[in-house]
Image 1: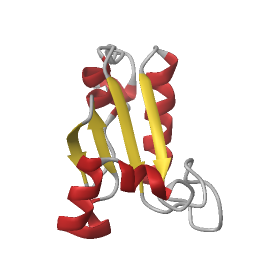
Image 2 (image 1 turned 180 degrees about the horizontal axis):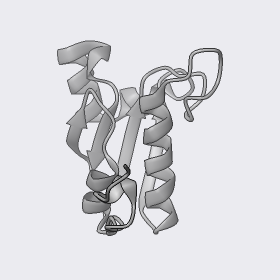
Image 3 (image 1 turned 135 degrees about the horizontal axis):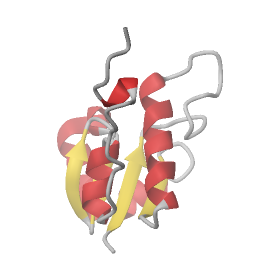
Length: 117
């Protein structure tokens, strides 16, 4: 199974629900990572505030940060190669990269294309 590494900006927590300002994108990203891990995906996350050496010691991450600065964060690597920078991967991307399938939407679900009227 491919290895996925996500290099987060400096965060107080990886869930996005700490402090007074909840980051909805970070909450969704954390849920998507947990979903993929639950299906067996190998995903590691690194926080710039807590694990700065992981950023320095990874050549791909270091080069991208040298070129683009912290705006490149978050950075997602798949098997050591940059797959995404500047935003978190979607559930679909995590499923594709880790070879786990995203659940199919059902017609009876409002989120799956049904009528919610």
